[in-house]
Each structure stands twice: as structure tokens, then as C-alpha cells.
Length: 349
Image (cartoon, rainbow, N blue to C red):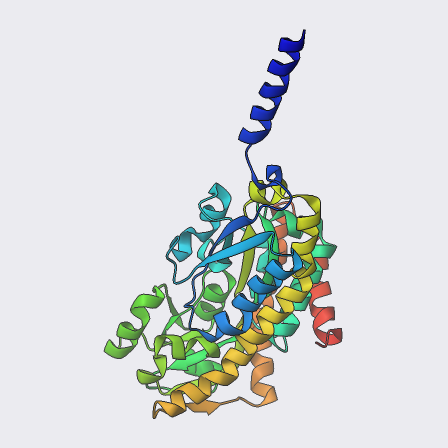
């Protein structure tokens, strides 16, 4: 009887020890999470957004969680970031959703042409609140756990030889544009959309293979695009959106108190900071970079009447997006769009 009890006890202890996942660790054991990040450790995004968030998680969990950041795509390539988090290669990934067109179609509301958020900070607040409000929108990101979401600052025209001032100036220009509604939009006004990896953009601009591109201003210094372009036109074409996502098994295996601690510094707060410090302030810092390098981009903001024309030209693609979403079974697409537009008017960071 005694021997049977001891055998049962030993078996139970072994079972506890070999159970999978960090939730089974002793309360005082440090859980290390692998974070796949695309930016450089020396970038302003790292300094102002990523490292502060990592430190806030470690502080909120009283040191029970440690995050190892794998910078510069050293854990996985950017286009593999989603799958890396899904498979467990990474516990957390930075995922730029534009790499996977059609995977989160309802969330593409953030990328509709000329939706025109006031700032990335505002857009990030709205995006997180929409995730909270609409289950169908949250479901787009399953099975991963979304820790933060940030639409970029507006993508605008950066060109080499011809400045775009009116809609007619786009005709015939070969432009790097994001897929989906933005591509169709540019086609409709006579542009020639191109799909080119960022690693090849500089050379293509330099050789005249491309006449320009749509770009978030903060991205210009990272790829030294100011060296091979001349004109920057402030027409808010669209926004891309990125997420910080966690492997579902890793998340589910964390004790509830650690989950709560992580979300106390993630969610709305992390999304807002991400938009503000990575995208908005990145755009402001960008000008200092190219001026220090001895370059000057000729900037132009069209008058309100011209911007209104661009917005009107985008309307059919916004309406088509709603029809396509309804056809795919997303009956609340119009509501999500309307709520987005109302929040733009009322949300002030």
C-alpha cells in the first residue's frame, strides 16, 4: 500500500515536470519569450517604442517574464513573421499585415484609399477600439493573440523627375503601391502600379525602372530614398497596418496574472505609443536626417479642392470593399467603416 502510494506520487511529480509550457513553471521561474522584430536595435523605433514596451512587460510581471528581441529579421524573414508566431518559432512577432493580402480582409478598412486619419497615433487608438468593439474584426487575427496594432502614418507620393500636384499628373507613372484597394485606385486614375520589394526600390528608382512610390515619410531615411528622389507630395493615399502578435500556445500557457500584467502595458496603450513614437515622430525625424545628409526634397501639399477630388475618386473602391465584405459573409463591414469615419472626427489623442 505504501509502495503503491509512493509510486503514484512519483508518477504525478514526473508528469508535472514534463508538462509543456511556461504556465507549469514555478512561480518564481523566469519565462523567456523570443520576439522576432524587423527593425534595427539602433533605430528610433527600437529606442522609442520597442525597448520601452519590452521593459514595461518585464517590469509589470516583476521580472517573471524576460523578452529576448531578435532584431533585424534574424529569427525570421518579414514575410514569415506571422507563420513564425503561429508555429512557435517566435513567441512574439512584429507582423506587417500587407505581406499577406486577403488574410485579414475586414481589417483592411484601415488601408482604404484616402481614409485619412489625422495621425498614426489617432489611427492606432481607433484600430484597437474597433478590435474591442467588433468580434468579427478580432477573429481575423486568429489563432494569434494580438498585443498591439498600429496603422502607419499616411502613405504619400515620393517621385524622381515629376512632382505630382494633380490627379492628372499620375497618368503613366510607374509607382510602387500596396496591393488591394490602393492598387486598383491608382490604376483607375492612370497610374501603373508595381510590386517591388523594399530591398530593390533604391536601385529601381535610381535606374528609372520606377518613377516613384507611395511611402510613409518615416521610411525614407531608412532606405536613403532621398538620394534617388526629388519630390514629396502630401496626399494621404492609404495606411498600412502592423500588429504585435503572440503564439496562442505561449499565451494560453501563461498564468492568468501574467496575462493580465502583459495586457496592462499592451492593448490600447501600446498601440497608441507605437503609432505616436514609431510612425508620427519618425516622420518628423526623417526631415532632419535627409537635411543633415545634404539633401532636400521639394514638398507640396495640394489645396483642399484638389484633395477633395482624390477623396471622391476613392469612393467607388470604398463602396466596393463593403460589397466584397458582405459577399464574403461580413455583414458588419458598413458598420465598421462608418464607425471608423465617425471616430476620425471624434478621437483626439
